[in-house]
Image (cartoon, rainbow, N blue to C red; front, side, top):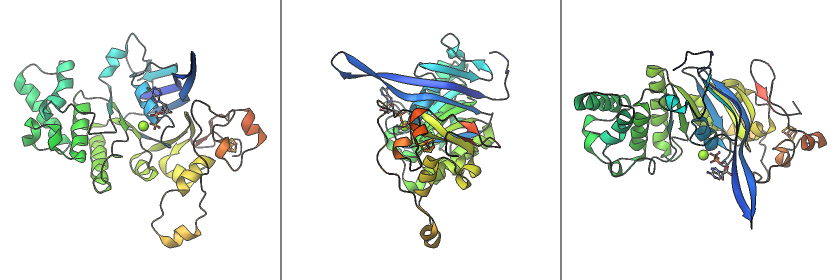
Length: 323
Ligand SMILES: Nc1ncnc2c1ncn2[C@@H]1O[C@H](COP(=O)(O)OP(=O)(O)O)[C@@H](O)[C@H]1O
Ligand code: SF4
Ligand SMILES: [Mg+2]
């Protein structure tokens, strides 16, 4: 692999992913799932990605790993552009953990084979014993007992399945993992354990995450920085604490005011902003600012131009004409 030419591990520049959708007889419309997204992630860093269902989070993750061919934009790994020709070299470096631990693992395979399969694919051992050792090490890293190796996934709870999923992702020793809502399908009571496991693994291995979730509190807990998405675009991005304490985009404000406040006194005093209406269809994105149909500050200018994402100081990026 080529030398690292950047201080960043992953860089995404103006990424676009459009899906052609049949919208009538002999008529297709482009569904703009990701519409010009840019961000950078350092080694060992976690960038959280939040937004309502359907805003394009999963598509960003899948396109970034080139599970979809990008419609436009560039993806750089260690400063080198990932393209059709060299993407195989990068397959090992960038992995994904999926949202649904029930459907993402093959039910006919034992845990040992699920975790060992990437080792087979990338030929990462010479003897059977070495393969077994590697699998057992990975299992212990994610908190699974060695006795679990010969069992099948249906014997495990959702939390344990997610541990199997991350052990599989870690098998090839990646530098970057896209975690696509890895705890959303789990019981609230075990979400914290699994989140802690992700953090411990990062501390031990120095792996970087793009951590996708729709729950801002979870994202705040695990992320160094947070990007907020709306209809295929990033509308705000900042250090995690800065974004939570000083949200600038009206959409982020309303997302934050929807977060349950544990203290009733604080809750009573806070001015809740209720988000009205539904997210427009990505088949029919509003002109100008994508949020304007739900924004209480919208002006004529907001309908005419797309507000650019600009730095308001200290790397706090906002795409809004008001602020
Ligand atoms: N493979 C696909 N083909 C067509 N449309 C898709 C495909 N994947 C996602 N979409 C559409 O793209 C939009 C963004 O989806 P997605 O990335 O899954 O959002 P999120 O993960 O934020 O919920 C949605 O409107 C979804 O229906
Ligand atoms: S650009 Fe206009 S419509 Fe968009 S969020 Fe800002 S004020 Fe609201
Ligand atoms: Mg998703």
